[in-house]
Amino acid sequence: MGNRGLLARLSSNTPERRIEAVESVLENLRSLLNMRVGSAPTAPLMGVPDFTDLVHSFPGSALTLSKAIRATILTYEPRLQSVLVRHVPVDVPMVVRFEVSAQLVDKSKSAVRFQTEFSPGGRAQIWSR
Image (cartoon, rainbow, N blue to C red; front, side, top):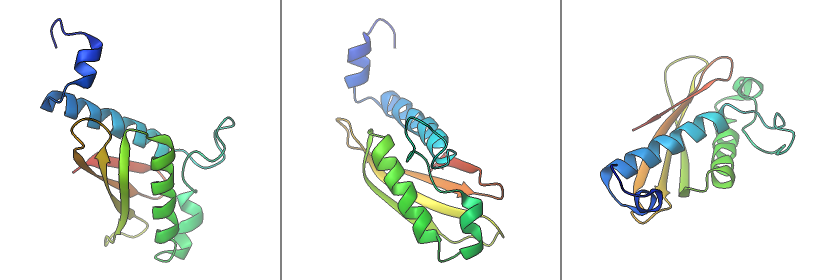
């Protein structure tokens, strides 16, 4: 990064900048998707429904959770646009996985993909594909 100013780094289109942006988005998504609706007093709609409340009605409630994930991302992660969330069936009991495809809102308009997995206890793990 050297002596380049903050604004120059933020507006650059280098691979390093894209990696920084994706890592920052991932960190925010980890927080958002591990937050339950109603747990933030100043933003009561922030987060996703409690996974443990939905797990008993899977696979039918996968659509409910995928819509909630998409709405949360669109509302609380302004660096992403064109967000699509798709349920990915897995053969592990009590585990639900989704693929998130989106586009960075920057000069590059780069496509990004994430996997998120909810496991018993409702904890979400998120990683880049």
